[in-house]
Length: 114
Image (cartoon, rainbow, N blue to C red; front, side):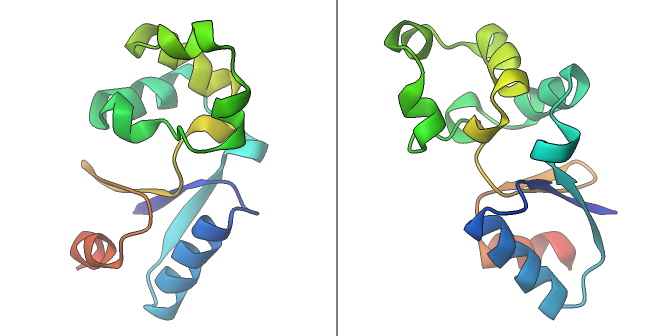
């Protein structure tokens, strides 16, 4: 089963879900704002997605973090950060089994669902 991780009101997540719906792809949606990102999910994300790809350094949540926290970000501190500030996780993330796609990428989506 395909899982889409993100935030319901995020435009990029909406676009990804619309693409999946148009292709008739069944998926479940994990909304970080409603369901959070627990320690198990955070660890899975970090184990499967490189840190520099996982963290959205362009968003306001990242920009609002103290420089001291941003400067010393590593996998251990990122584990706590993404549980506390789910908006710092790049969106959307699609997962099908052991395959992961980060961000909006129709070619990667097609490869994932076919």
